[in-house]
Image (cartoon, rainbow over all chains, first blue to last red):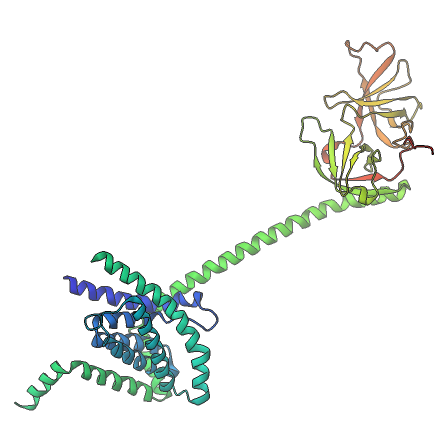
Length: 163
Length: 276
């Protein structure tokens, strides 16, 4: 197995790991209904590294997996995650040199866009939409950004050390 | 260029856009499914692709749940064990307390019950700590006893606890009287854990005689039970053998088994008072 395939295997393993952690660990670290979105962190990290198409497929795969267990919002996760993965893929490392802090900003933008698309695709309108944004999205966004910041700083440090 | 070639070139050049369109169409199709269609999709996916994953996750969550439940049950078990031990102790204590209550009613004395908190860790058991003090009307020299007999007297008194000088302390002396012959003597410890009764030589004292307090010292009132005469003990080293007869004494109340005691609330009759 050459280096490129190894990298892909590692990235797929990270996506699967994020999904597993989301279903297991996150329920223990959740603050009420506020919980971080680990798969989204993994998708955005992958998109920023590999570009739009990789982000798109990663988002689609992870979104579909999550949708299987969300009958009422079937397809909404897939749509929101693949769009966010695709869009943030345009800021990939090869095109835009970004510091970890900038990646956290991308993560924040991606999170807000993801939830907006998700709520609209799930049929949230007017009052319910804004309630969900203020009560669920914003606090969860902060929580996700905190974890995402740790992940981005750690990966940047590791890359720096390898270089 | 025919249509197939054009399509191949377009897919190569615009594969990102085509992938996006494909994903959006697929997601939109899923969103547009009605309820039964969604349930079928869910069942097909969970029954095939996600079955191993579900098995893994439910196994992990089950393990975590069992671990937590085990932790909770262990905690409950410890708590219940402690409660059970305490209840057992209370059950064992009940007959003793009932006996003390009966004694208090029968004796007609002003008694106060106290618990033994600690004892002198030395080789000779010479003192105890009780859980009552001056705040509970205790004073120095008050007699300490059980329903069987005397055990000592209050030697020091603090706010909420006091120290008892036990009869095994060589410095502890009590005036005695043989219940049968009314001969008076003195109770003391020989310093090795044995009690002795000293009587004038030739006194009418026999093995098995009951000894009671004589009430001469001002500390113990007359008539409290002390022990039984166990036999004459004449030592070669005792220079006073021709003047005093020394008898062994078996106390009625062994100090090994005492957990609760009574303090006789009374004033020291020999207390010096300054006359103005």
